[in-house]
Image 1: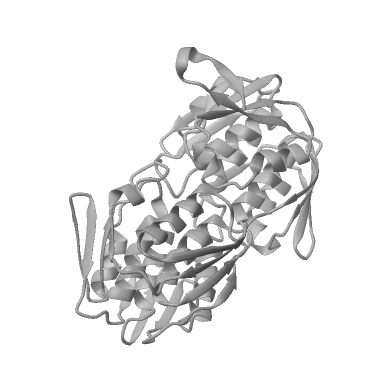
Image 2 (image 1 turned 135 degrees about the vertical axis):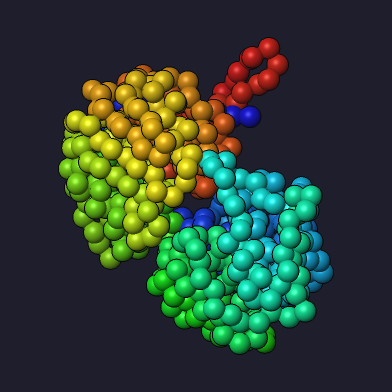
Length: 428
């Protein structure tokens, strides 16, 4: 086990290169099952969620070949099972995308309920509704989702609630179904578009991704392809906020600025300078912030995955800021950690009221989930004194080489091994 040790007060400056999008990669990797061929995936982020998904496919019989750190070839011709047990899914929420992919390939799937971050109930009823409208029966028994069909048939599917996971799962199942599938009230996130582009590169016919109506004409066969994953919108946003929070000046490279518009807009509202270029953004800040109101919403609204990071900045803004969580019911667990560092926050359900303080103070804290962990890093970078962050296994799930990237920008941060015997610690 390891923790992070952060000596706060250093202003971030320089450049940071953004990796491939986690949320796109964990959908595209299982989508390779549909091709029964060799797919070459480029710009793969080197993070534990992706490693876990690749390991699952390997255990199912896929042949994995690493070309380099960020490029892999996946040969799914040799996959010979539609069953994915709990031992393979317990660490990864996105493992439920295997249901749609296996249904599309075999017309049946048996996949254990997923693990991953826990910040509220994650019902899969919309996923099951979509599978059933495509002609499958889907049941949950002994923590396993069992879905099967004689064959899948295209159908109109209306999502009662905008759901990224359900939209992706239905897309995966529908690309080889007979006839036309129309997904209404579909999620519009950038990684939905990226998945659609990947499926089309394999020979699928997916139209309308990025709008609230996606039309999929089923095809009988898909083939291998070479595809590069988009940059990670949330990683980019996290470093944008970190640069602002420390009064820094950072060029965030390898981004699609349009994907960052909602984040950029809120930083500008706080008084931060953001300059857009073709594939980068420059963030400059004097460390003084105006109060704002913030509400998370499905894309193109402000992303829920950026709420904890932005909230840390608001904890030292001038005045009282309101943060409303419009996606997950229980995303404010990290507030207890922030209060330990001197923040003044009141939470009422899905609303938090931040009364800006002069500064945060270093303290021992933990990462309650992936994005909460990123928020604790930003808090530690801002704070006076030393902050230690435990449970960093969550952070490793979604941020590639984040310690090295932050150190290259001037942060005083390092990993420290936690030895279990007699509470003795040593530097790792």
